[in-house]
Length: 300
Image (cartoon, rainbow, N blue to C red; front, side, top):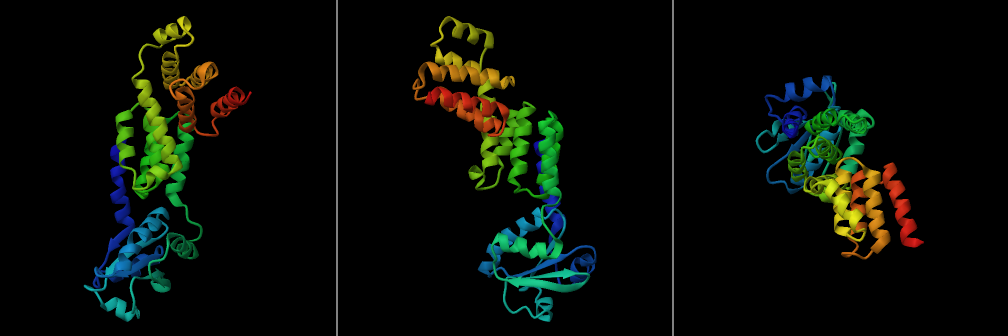
């Protein structure tokens, strides 16, 4: 499944390209008859141009094919910029039906660029968001393979879509392909570690990796039955139960450990339970139930 994320470059190349004076009529004038085309006039020596490029490319990719971006290096191809009266760069001019209709100058922040595009094409969102929503629905319906395909398709449209990355990781975890899930997590864009969806996907992967190393559950259960204060065995049992999808039973084991000795091993049982909550999602029914039971133990 992870290999499908490699389609991102191809998807981006259809939306973003460089042009020349000779190709301008085809790349911009003719193409804008079908959909809006943004022309980004830039030069290698222009610092603000370098600031604008990743932002405008991200917004265009996230628009789901509603608009295309064509970049023109005015140092190599000055004629078109001169004809359009471009005197300062970066300058972005939008073409529709073969005519320039709007534009802006300077390295605007992402929110303003989105607003500029929405004036042209209406509310953004696009195909990528629809694919992510379909992937989430497939994952909730117990179809992780379908979900992984949908999230990969979304990443082909926008390789920096953190919701799609998080969904793909969770789908791969559900498929039991932890190696591919870890590889997908490692490929997430810079700053992903601060994203809530990625954090939840990481937690899901980590608890699945923990479960993979747990031994025989019957043996762990026997240890807990023989010694209810064997918290190490109880926590391992909870991890193993969670790995089998038995969330309520897993939470109950950890809650019992907290009830008996909440301070054991620096609060290990409570910390493990909180990691489960993050992996399951804060609105999951088992998270809500276990959180209520945990509060009853801690504050009774």
